[in-house]
Image 1 (spheres, rainbow, N blue to C red):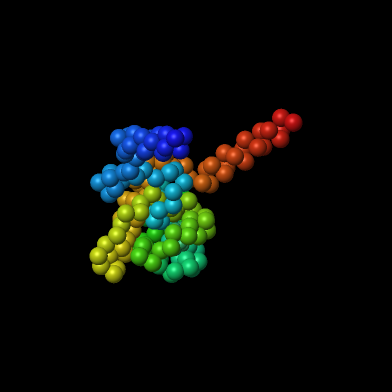
Image 2 (cartoon, protein in one colour):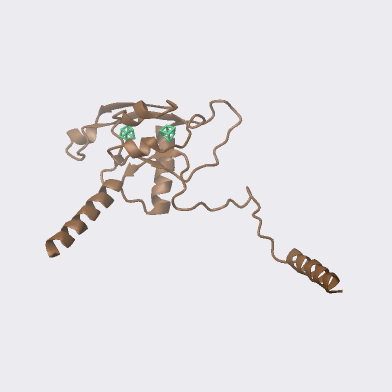
Amino acid sequence: MLNSLKGLMLTLGSTMKGIRKPITQEYPKKPTPVKDRFMGFPALTWDQDVPEPFCTGCMVCIRNCPTQCMSASMKDNPLNEEGKSSRRKIVDYFEINLNRCILCGICVELCNFDAIVMSHEHEMSTYSRNGDRVNLPELLKIGKKYQSETDWIPPSVIEKQKNESEDVVVEGN
Ligand code: SF4
Ligand code: SF4
């Protein structure tokens, strides 16, 4: 008798669950929001103050990319010649073949110029083999979107602020 009642309660419980609001998302109609620290495809950042890309085309990320999916070139920076930018060299050409990118983040870790980020973009599938070869304007567009959505602050600025606050604490002791 007791077992029958337990079974009945279980059935009733399952039935009630069935009329609850569904917790599934209608992806891809309603994209699932990603977390702040989500690492999507790499993108290039834009220096609002100058304005120009942060990237100098120094090739450090390109030499160290494990899948060799990036290429770039640099040029003399005309804004430096005009005294408007401290960057003597600036990126001229940049391409990432995102089909080959493994989202490892090594390029971001190694960049000394705050020039590359792991954006939140991840829905970039195409039907063609090389359909995700992304050029400089497109990489900057993705980067700018990421910067505005996340209120991005260059890592070197964060590091500087951290060091300054630590110095204040040491002086206070
Ligand atoms: S993203 Fe950074 S490491 Fe890569 S080429 Fe540009 S400045 Fe150099
Ligand atoms: S995330 Fe990794 S694989 Fe992708 S471009 Fe950067 S270094 Fe290369």
